[in-house]
Image (cartoon, rainbow, N blue to C red):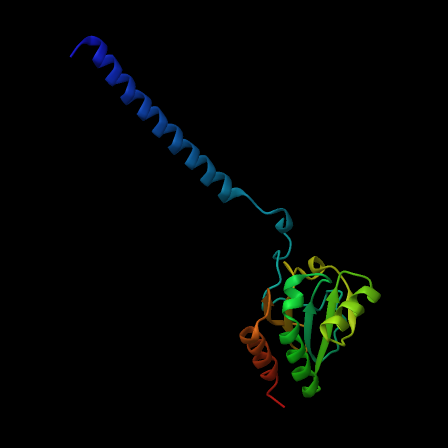
Length: 179
């Protein structure tokens, strides 16, 4: 081997070692940054998204003491809300038959737009104008079931097909025993 060949080989080894060191240092820096990163909505406050066990008692939702609540958080024009309409109608009918569950639609649009949208879906429900984020809801549609004290029992986020709709109906039927 010539001295030039040794230099070339040594340079390649040195370059590979330097690249590996840069990759390891970058990975360590990213790991440290992620461990210490706190999402903006969670700066020592409540959890960022609504979960079972959380309370609706201090929210904008008008709760009647001692009555279960079924909340449909929707948004006019949301394609997932629209595709969930058959399941939402079935759930609302079943809950209405029980007679001890309050059902409320929560939409960010004004009352007229919200009512027109709901009627287009075949739903006739009272409406509360509020942003999904006011309830710590990530997106629409979201169905929230709470007990008579406002404690969240279940949250279903995303489009409801027939199976998920049946799951919601089963949970509603089990509140305080079925009627």
